[in-house]
Length: 104
Ligand code: FES
Image (cartoon, rainbow, N blue to C red; front, side, top):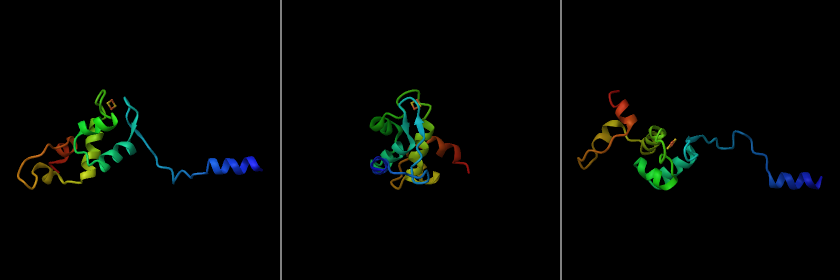
């Protein structure tokens, strides 16, 4: 009885709906989507290179770059028109998904 009580305190039951589901996005460095999105949000990252510098994601084969750019674009929630030209008139680098969906 005592062992069960101690175990339940040490290892509380967490239902699957409460546990955050993480998915490994960068296979080279085993970095999850939660980690990447957390860094993008907390440090206001706007380029893939910045993400690579803080957590390593994207620093290998680069096959995850499309998803890294998607997360950056989602975080900053800029419609394609506003990405193309900022308020000061300078054009900004458009992400791959911005380029793909700019026509729609
Ligand atoms: S999967 Fe991210 S660098 Fe290879």
